[in-house]
Image (cartoon, rainbow, N blue to C red; front, side):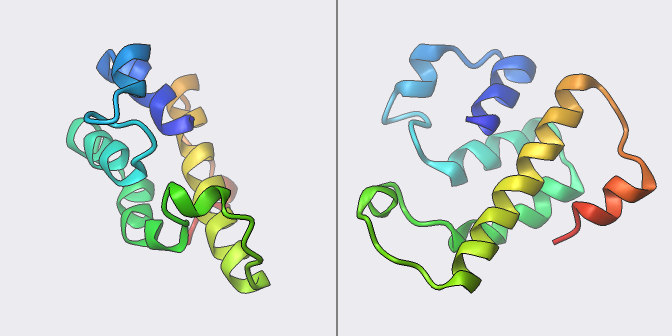
Length: 104
């Protein structure tokens, strides 16, 4: 949702495009690659290889039990990316404390 919000604001992503299975749909990798193409950013760059810690679309609804370490890795990626999107939408530069808090 945060990646789509970023692209809607800075790249003109429409609701139709966001829902199109051939365009982005729930493909976090495609969404993040597009963001990196239009707005290179160290947080987004660091997040890209860590997307593998998140389950694939079908796996997100499987009801699988994950070990705490896997959950933590997935939450960390999601929270760091979400915080960076919110900063971009608010047009704010991160403080020194925020930079430390959003490191992977």
